[in-house]
Image (cartoon, rainbow, N blue to C red):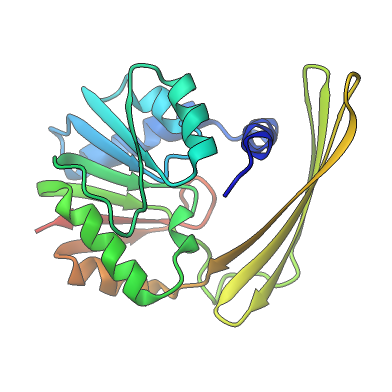
Length: 237
């Protein structure tokens, strides 16, 4: 789980790297409406700090967010005072209503560990969909497309704060192990060192497609996507 300062730094780093949440939200909305033109409601699962929902809120009549991290959820709620948020696990949530679309972006689904968890998650998504509703999932890398030993680095300046982020990714079994270090420097606080460590599962493309099918959805895979890892688009039968 993210500490609150990590959650805030996370936002600043990705904004500094040029992640355009408005453009991504507009592209998500357009993609959803290709498959369901009359979409009015949307649920963002693993919504993080609510950056996409800031813009999706103006593109659909009704949006909600689901997030497991209490600290990220707090930031999302502050950022989107008119949006309903739920603290919950993508594998087993039950909100008591259905949506025209369910999305799960930024490869959050890669934090699942097994195909059984992938199945339960896609069933949870489908259970919250109207018939003919749309699921959009941004996967993590497939085993064939992951680059072992990848090093990422960035420096972000936000007001008086300077943030240096360095990451190193290796393969451990069927997962990516990502070690992330942040140096956060500001005039009144000196330099702080924050760290994260993530294991993100390298599910093959066929595992995602099988989970969609077992959940009762037709599915297509689209190359590209916001991070170059593609998108799965499922339609509830």
